[in-house]
Amino acid sequence: MTYILGDSKINSGVYILEIRLDKKIKLKHPKFLNFQLKAGFYYYVGSAQKNLSSRIQRHIRKSKKLHWHIDYLTSANETSVTKIFILSDADKKFETIIAEN
Figure (cartoon, rainbow, N blue to C red):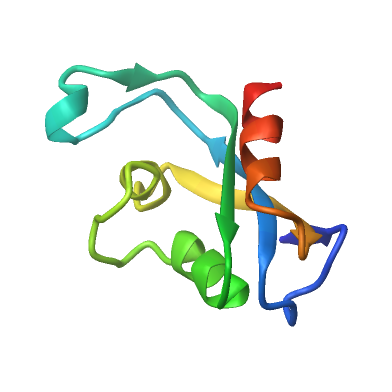
């Protein structure tokens, strides 16, 4: 796993997860019936106003309560988080700017 633009000791900021999907999967979520993702790399942009390290560690764990939409992808055995880009102390609105571009 690679941390870029930050380290694991920061408390808040915006982060980007690079998620590798080894083979095509169908997401098991009530809102995404029959939604399939092809093998490849996907990027998830998130933010944490506190406990950033804990938030990222949660995304990496396979075993977790499925709470956020991204949990359905990151908990799949066919996926792995390969890189984490951390923008320490970035304003939460920067999350939207990144995601829209």
